[in-house]
Amino acid sequence: AVAVMQEKYEVVRGILYGFDYRRLLAAEPQERLQGIAAAMDFILGQQDGKKRYLDAVTALSKAFALAVPHEAALAIRDEVALFQEIRAMLVKTTVSASERTPEELDAAVRQLISRAVSGREVVNVFAVAGLDKPDISILSDEFLSEVRGLPHKNLAVETLKKLLQDEIRVRFRKNVVQSRAFSELLEEALKKYHNRAIEAAQVIEELIAIAKEMQVARRRGEKLGLSEDEVAFYDALAANESAVQVLGNETLKGIARELVDRVRNSVTVDWSRRESARAQLRVLVKRILRKYGYPPDKREQATELVLKQTEELCKEWVVS
Image (cartoon, rainbow, N blue to C red):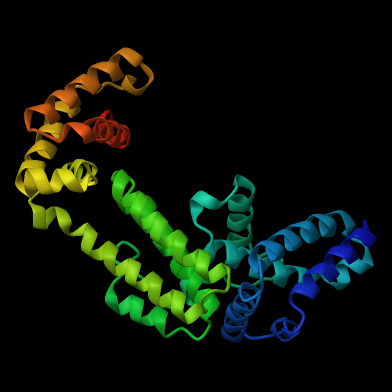
């Protein structure tokens, strides 16, 4: 067990080669906090650095637990605690909840609430990145400006990525079209960054632009005079550009309002699992589209998108 632990220990040290992490072992809390941010930025600046580090520290932690209380394990106890602290903050700060395995979530929570190993205070994840804790639901211009000015650019990218993923998951979960569109924009920007096609500072600007588009999208309902549910159906209908040209916004808004009213009164808790109920709903949607003169060549496609949108809204409708 000790030999395996030493092997895994060297793997972690190899990932951190070139970064003086030892200075953090006896550092004061604020200095340690700044050092953790620098370590995270160092790791994120490497090719596939985050995944390699998370996996390496997990393997080391398991081997370390088996080797304790051997003197070789006790000799590196403080370093392992620091490695785990950096790992926990990487997960907490850069990994969206939907991406984490149950084991990762459990490990992150246990690491952040436990002071038994290092005896140090738990720190705010945004403080690690160098930010005042933001109102995530707003992603305000002031906060985005703070992100732009962060010294650790790789960490800034990952922090902003997590915030945007969570914003999409929370704010746009009911809107299939918007959720898909913003997810694709985010994925495209991050792909260029991970492929080293653009620098961290450039991708930060692209992510900030996406955040600003989200701000505008969240206010569309007020501008259109539609509820959040109605906007979701409106977007599903307007995904077909020819329908927008033929029918215009006012007619599409009328269809969206009627869909919410009629569909909401038609769905049941198990409608998505009962083929007969789905068939009836499909007929209802087609009837409404035909009533308003929705382009026939796009009607089937629109019906499918409306049904998919209904599945998302139904999750709240059946319990409200």
